[in-house]
Length: 220
Image (cartoon, rainbow, N blue to C red):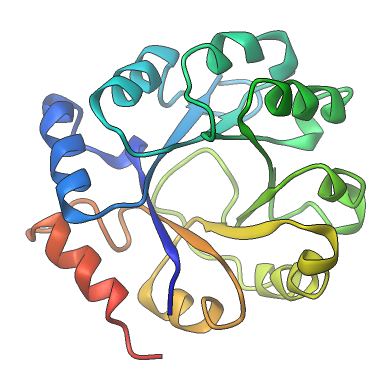
């Protein structure tokens, strides 16, 4: 079964970021997930524009940029100028007055437009954005910190999204508390990719390539 694996780079070792990027790329990661936080939309600061630029220049793998910032349209040009055509940019619809305008800016720059859906955000409230976004990042934890517990009611939201994704033309991605059992349950149902953080990938005493191979060889 084919599914995508993305490395949550906010969990990487920043004392040796060059080696982290190199080892993840060699290990077969599909893309690098970049969490940008402004301390306002979420109560935390994470990666910066310069972190994103460094990883973009250090690897040929796609970037998956998750903007957890207020009014992303005010700064979207800064991010888009540092990315490559085909990279993905997610915004939170609640963080913007007119999210469709921001998504169109992402499209016009040749990037893949995405929305991130918080645990407390219903499918119904983002329905019109689903007609524009090509990727939907479903948050299974409240955004802002690594290592949180999975919120089980999110599974019902994924079921709703799976029922309409073909008709509306988007793919579903999982972010937060991603364990092997979640991949085993949701990949066969149609979730396209999974963001890997401290639950499965980082902070282990094993090579990234071995971990990623084990995940890809899960028995469905």
